[in-house]
Length: 551
Image (cartoon, rainbow, N blue to C red; front, side):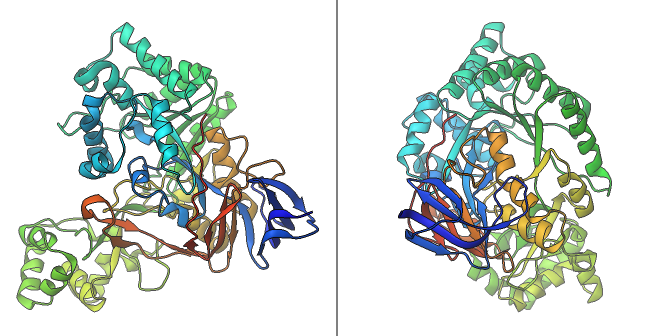
């Protein structure tokens, strides 16, 4: 019997958590048709000898809502084994939307997620009002990988309440309408609902985004409607300001919806800080509540270097930042300019140099550097001011040197405690957002390379489960996430021995030439989406085989 595609001689980690076994996989009509011995030949064959074969990865936290309009390849995540991406996080979405409110929603996305408003307005078709129509528009874009979407609290509240949505509570009638629209969106195909209570997220006019201060009864009413339609409730919470109150809201959502609840979390600075969230999650599950969390698998927050953002914001540094990259490099070659930059950095301290870590000059960026690789200690070792070290390293590398600021997940021991929870999963890559400031879209590659291969926190089987089947279950996908006969054929073929992320790099491929970081990978021999090879040897094939996954 001839199959459409056969992957042979690989070591298969099927996503269930079981340890890998040698097997072949046959694919027909976009579906896995056999696992094990596969006689005959495939119309196309992939020799996976020496390679790890896994399900495609599921990214539960992206903001590719805008970028999908001009980049249907959905880079960078499609370079990193992701075959399903969830859009619409953090409450900010583009639907539902009245025609006259498009600029408002685009402005909210810009202020919350740092996606240029001009790119949003010009790069999307804006042919919708309802959420179902929005999904139709996404489908017409023919994405390379699968996408699902959450309907956002900000959009629904603004749709119902207008400008009052950011500063007032809804009337009883408005509250019922908000909940009903959320449920209708799920019935029209949304994977669920997202809300945002983080106090650092603002509208363009400086007010907190709609829903930030919503009373619990409003969120409970939404959860009841969303749960009845089978959807997921996703949360960005104010855990730093009201841990117990926000934890109780999660419990209320789970009880009201009778279904799945997800929230984002990071570990604190102390070694034991991840244990508090683990204990909370364990208690919630002991009570029968299906509540899960995701966290970035490493320290993150900001990338600094000559090509992007600087640690100092004094006049000379601001002036330098207004130049394009070649002009910046020319400027710091001048000794007087360097002296002025250092002098201002000495009197106007910026980002703490002890929290900025050199990403190294090897092919693989160093995300786990120790204190001696911080800008502060590197400067101290050379008897320099950190600004002198920053500028010297920029010159020596022709501007390529990068540092990463660990403002979130500063302590990797605490991160390990958090990620070893049965109910906390790696993710939170934020692809599509803050594109000129940070780059964490390679999170799945980091999990397999660092937390699995290099440190052994996860076995291979468990690492693969945590980036495939586990997030697929949270998202509500019953036909993906494991390499099982009858499941959709989303598959990766990986050289685990050489797998790693490449260094982030700035490109100017957003509409109107806006800059963004991208990050490529090494080690993906192939990625298959819905039975079609979309990536081979770390490069896209040009195929766009993704689907819009409707709840």
